[in-house]
Image 1 (cartoon, one colour):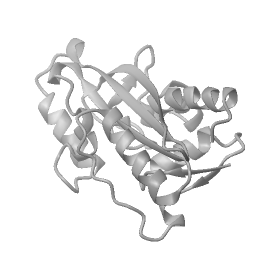
Image 2 (spheres, one colour):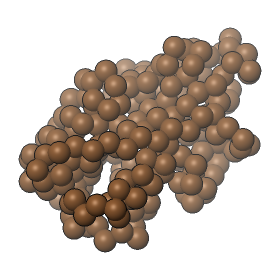
Image 3 (tube, one colour):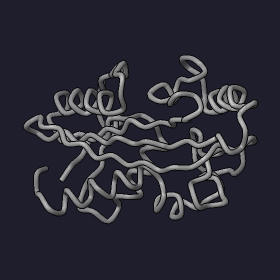
Amino acid sequence: MELVLATKNRKKIEEIKRITSDLDIKILTPEDFKNFPEVIEDGRTFKENAAKKSLAVAKFTNKPSLSDDSGLEVYALGGAPGVFSARFAGEGAGDAENVKKLLEMMKDIDNGDRKARFVCCIALTTCDFKTYFFEGTVEGSIIREPRGVNGFGYDHVFIPEGEYKTFAEMSDQEKDALSHRGRALFKLREFLKLRNII
């Protein structure tokens, strides 16, 4: 079966391909299509953004589509950056700028109050345009200086609860077993095994 990923984020594509590599699915990406739609992420929740992207891509390609909207929620910041995680430091800002802004905003927050969580909402839209959702979360805390060379986004400053390494210090396999995206994709995998819907 074919499944179109509704993202151009190469790191997300790598993670999704890696975690689903043993399934009988041919992953297609925006590079496999001409005039692939650019979907504006203006939803107020991860679920809204994921649904909007997967539905638009399923309609454009006439194939099942999978989208992922995810981000970091810091409790002491009222849940920010949240749905704005990828553009926290402004449109076009990269990971380094987003992390820098986050750490600057948190510089006066005590170590005991630096709790946060990563959230991933995956939307799967089928050929009949029904959409199914799979959510994964991981609790942790934000450290004061980036550590590690792997990963992307806020991986360099996030330590999962009960761990001592940031996501960026972990191997792909270690991160996949703990991450919000890994957990959401595990739910998707179980769903696909139970129901042959795509």
